[in-house]
Length: 465
Image 1 (tube, rainbow, N blue to C red):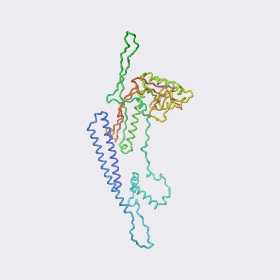
Image 2 (cartoon, rainbow, N blue to C red):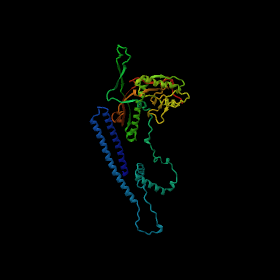
Image 3 (cartoon, rainbow, N blue to C red):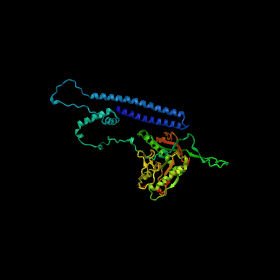
Image 4 (cartoon, rainbow, N blue to C red):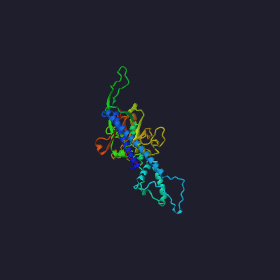
């Protein structure tokens, strides 16, 4: 093997060692995450073994790095000596030669077929130059200068990149990978968020369902008295998770493969959580909200506007003095833009501070999932959430608009969620598979003080613009 081949082999070993060290680190992080989550199956001995495995990987990396330093230094010295041997210096001694025997000397070529018939050194220099090796760049530049002198006619011809299919290497912009679009968690970020208790699979709340009373007393008679009573409200703790099996080849030979998978899983986790808040059977917002029907074969925003007032009015009536003034509207993006598209010279009465004939105020600086998108003419802020179904109703083409109090809508989440498990054991190990699992616990309720409203019906079919 040549010195360059030895260096290439060492670099490959270093790359594999770095991937191995990354895998050991991920295992250690996953174990510590399990311990933090209260998983008693992970013991101190397991942690110590994982630490020892990671430290052994560090030592292996250090050994290979030291070897590379030595090999590169030897190669640099060999190149210096080789370059020195090609240099021509004047000796100061003049020799007289017959004019007829004068010959023009020629310096040795950088890449000589008689010494490297397969062109291996040239190919290695092409690769090393891409990796930033200055010596390789210098040799390739010298080679091109030699070619321009000795093959000037050939260089006058034009050859496109198709003539060098083996040398014009396609580039993959791995930092610009296009992720799959997700609906995200706009509603989950807007409602009241609390830490999930450390134990148990239910969250229990006391709801006062029979209240005390007060009334005018008739002199000499007893004052009003009603025994207070409560009802237990139970919210189940739910597990949301996703997994992916990746081959070791994809993890160790790919560029950022594991990061892309984990990022996609995390975004799926948050989308599934938000969709659960809206669509889960029995307890999801669509199933607990009181319906306000808007039936219209040719809907317009002006005709729908009374329903947009009926929603917050009903929320306020349900909460009374418990209404903190934080009622919001939650709608699909298609409905938000349709409302904005409705212009009329006779638009309904609007709230204070708004211009005439507008369907609301949009925040031009906001974007999907970043908070409130704007305000309805009544002053109610709007959250846009595309986890809202658009296949409802008889025609399977309706969506819904929700009105809720953010203070009376509860979401409990584990502070460390989502958590990661990475394992290289089990059924996948025989096929060199790496199993990655992302999961977390949550609970929610809109029913501590039932108040949620929704506008639905044929007036909310697929909008036309």
